[in-house]
Image (cartoon, rainbow, N blue to C red; front, side, top):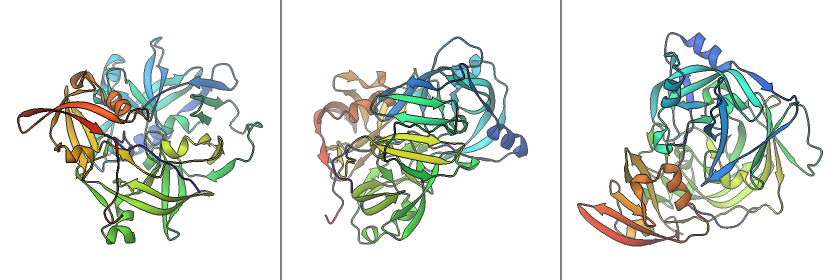
Length: 407
C-alpha cells in the first residue's frame, strides 16, 4: 500500500497519438515503423539527464550536425522536432498525419524522416519525427525523444541518480537488481509505440495504462472512466473553472478531480489517491509513481521492470496553488483554476494575464520554467502579479490541499 503527500498537477505536456489521414497511409506506416538502432562503442551507454519540474531533459544529435540539441524524454510521445529544426535541416514536406494530444484536441501535422537522431553514443537511423511548434515550452527545447525512438532499446531510467542506461544487448538482465517486479506491456503505432499495460480500477473497471514520463501525476484517469465511478455519480468531485491540463494541441475543455479507492498497476495496488481527469482512452501513469522505482523498459521484449528504491511511498494528497498557466506568444495566461483553491479564492480566473511570478517577468518564463516554479517541493508560497478585468493585482498564493466535494 502506498501512502504520502503530493504536489499538484499543473500541466500535461503531450501524448502524441497519431493515425493516418492521407492517401499516403502505407508510406506513413512504413516510416513510423522504420528505424534501426546503433551503438557507437558496442557497449552499454549511460546518459545523464536534468529534471525540470516533472520533465526529463537530455541533449543529443540530429543527422550529421555537431550541434547539441535539447530534447524532452517522453515515453508517451512520438518523436518530435521543432519547426526551426526542420527548417535548419531543410527537410522535405513529409507525410501528413493526424496527432491527438492528451487534452483531447487534434491537429494535422507533418511526419518526416531523420537520417539519424541520438543521445550520447546511441542513435536510430531513418527515424520518423513529427514536426511541431514547441516554442511555448521554451527556446531551449528542440524536440521530444519518444517511444518510436526508444522501442529499439532496453532502457533503464534512474530518477534518483538522474541517468538513463541503454543496454547494448536487449536481452541483458541487470544482475544487481533484487526483488524486481515484471509487468508485460504492449505497443502499437497508434500510440506512438508507448508502453501500454493492463490496469484495474476499484477491482472492476479494466483499462489500459500508458507509461508516461512526460506526465507529472501518479495516475490520471480518463474522464470516460471517472463517469462510471460511484464517487463521480455522487458528486464527490472537484471541478475546474477552465482547464487544468493540456496536451500538444490544446487544453481540455474541463477537468475533474476525485479520489480513487484502488488502482492495480501490475503487482502494485495503489489505494485512496487523488486523480485528475484526462481526455484519452487510457490511464496516464506518470512521474510521481514511476520515480519510486529504478525503471527498466525492455521494448523489444515488451517487459517493464519496477525495482523499488526503498519503501515505496507515493503522494496520495494534492497540495496546489490551484492554477494552470499557458503561453500565448509572450503572454502568460490563466488556463484554469480549481474551485475553492487558493487561486480561486483570490479571484484569479481563466483568461487573466500573469505579469510576474516570484518577481520574475512572466513574459520571459517558458512553460517549463513555470512548471519548475509551481512544482517546487521546497516552496509553499508564490508572489504573483496579474491583470484581471483590466485591473492589476498583487498577492501571495498559498499551496493548499485540494479536497473533492463531500469529503
